[in-house]
Length: 160
Image (cartoon, rainbow, N blue to C red; front, side, top):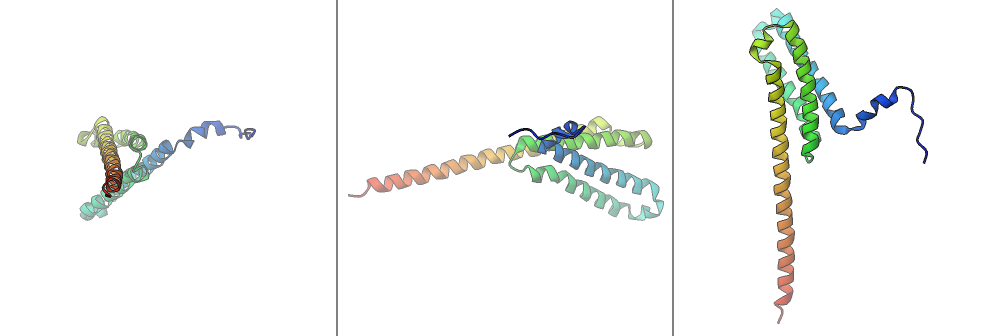
């Protein structure tokens, strides 16, 4: 079958066929939107200051929900989970760097490098836990199959 002709400029988007990168980019955009909205609400609406705890709780819950997208999407594929999570966190780190330029006190709380390492280690930890879980589940499955086969073959030899 012949290749279909591509429109001009479409070749640039072919790398988006990689599901891990696509999920990571979209998750990174979602995380960045939530982060920027959190910053804007916290700094531009002083009338909402009495509700700071509720605001931070809602924003934190929204971030955790967005962070879970790669973990839920690639639950049984730890390599893809890590790639998608690292891509998303890199985009969030770039947004954090841009926000540091405007909000100078943001850097005093946590630097961009620390933000990146926090996300990379977190997604790495989740990917390793997923990998270990898959190994344990595979070993258990093989053990169950082998013990059933041994039990059925031992039952046949006992008939006198």
